[in-house]
Length: 211
Image (cartoon, rainbow, N blue to C red):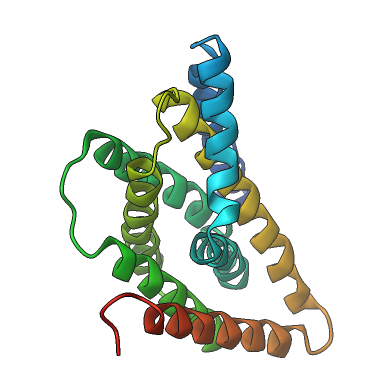
């Protein structure tokens, strides 16, 4: 009986742990932003919040992460939205520091295509594979945010802003992904994935140097 009880409660415990980790990470980032008081921190935080939603490619990829996680279910429904912002912070630090990283724009466009196709094809990727894919794309997106840090902005506030906004977009995607429970909801999600992938191809086509 004890072993059965453990097996029944372990998934719930894992789910709760992931949610607590995500809350702690985002809370720490927000606290670090406001530890730098003054107008620069406020402006940096606002600039960070706005940056992901003013970039169409960023917006699509971040919502797609949430949708894909929701279609994959536990533990990825929460693990993917945690892994992406964590690696975004790494990429953001590299971008702010000016560390060279090639193919940033191509990597961002590829993230839209790949995530869209994963949703469209209902790809049941293994947990490690899905995490590696999302984490790698998180670095590209974070680097782009960091490299575009506005002058006179507080870097920590800016990073906290775009990470918190990213988390909100992930949650939006997760909410959209729950539509799979509705009649023909799965077909609708797969169609949305195909549209996201098509928009990713369009973004690729509009990149400089692409015929």
